Image (cartoon, rainbow, N blue to C red; front, side, top):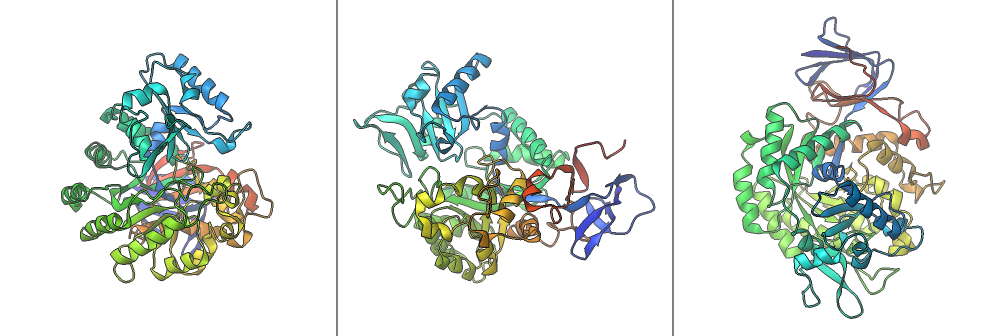
Length: 530
């Protein structure tokens, strides 16, 4: 089918165009076609390349839309209230799962809830509420009992059961300890997974997202997820391109998985494997990010080293054998330093597979230079500034904070940087993420001058990092990520031009139409006539 979008302001590598012609999912021309089965009058609105979130958790977004959401909780009392109401609204639930609380947003005191707090909600059903970061959770007594967690239970590798003064677990679960307890819950069925993906695709399409690099795939769910998404792809039901950042921490299991699933005939440019994704540390908010020195506001800890470097190297070499890159979650400067060293060992000269670092938050200038020297891909989440700019100096000290979240400096040093949201850690809205990159402010407009304002990027740079650079990260920049002849027709029509509005207003721009592979996946106001 041929489609024309006319009366538009279209940003292309050749400059601004006013019409674009699409056939069989690709851009074929920028002149107005005389005949087309589908015509879209953009009414003078702005058209940019579709947003490509370079790191998120699509399945978890769908699940978040289906469980108890705790983002609105402003105190432990709110958590208790929301939990009790959820039980009243869902009396048939045998267990309660929630996510999204953040103790730093509590208005009474920034104290984490414990099992005693969750026991006030319910004691005869297991409850686990995960912090917004996903690296810490809290369980009630019933959940701990069902998981077999007692005073004598040893901490799992890469995690911890936080204990009271008597050594008894208080319900707070760090890193792998959270997964240890979550094993009591039944695995997601294929029907659940399919429902979650449909909800998530509908939601992110409404935000202008046309492609995601998503970390959903693990050893325990690989067959279900790949079977479902390959079916979606074959049946034309994918609303976004899905590129898997898959996680395996067992060499034998990884080898078996890649032997089975790297057959190119199983995948397409809409759905494929993109990178092995490993975790070196936790999160800054939870103080589990791995630091080289103790936390400024908690000298008793340097965070958590969740995976030894030798393990990272061994797994990375297996991925490399199958022509796949290694990307590593690293937030603290200690994790970043270790990860740079590991990737330097695994990667070939020039990093042709485009391995890199996800998050790359706490850095000094030397780490930024090393990242560029080794040509590492950096997967940034500018939206993290909304929360982190308020805590980073307290966590790591003012001097280290000055060189962290260094989006502009890292680009100027020559590293490839792409943008995403790590949703559902934050909402996947690209316009809010762009706003944070350009203004260095939180979503309320603070601080007025921006956090470390020299690290602001331009609108053009931010848009490129949300499209071209994300495509570069997965070696598809020859056909994805910009509006050019021969490229896939992944695009967004916006209510306002982000280049022209006041920077503070970028976050308020609306997505009017989203198109992936030449197919409209979201239409806010019925631009398209039957």
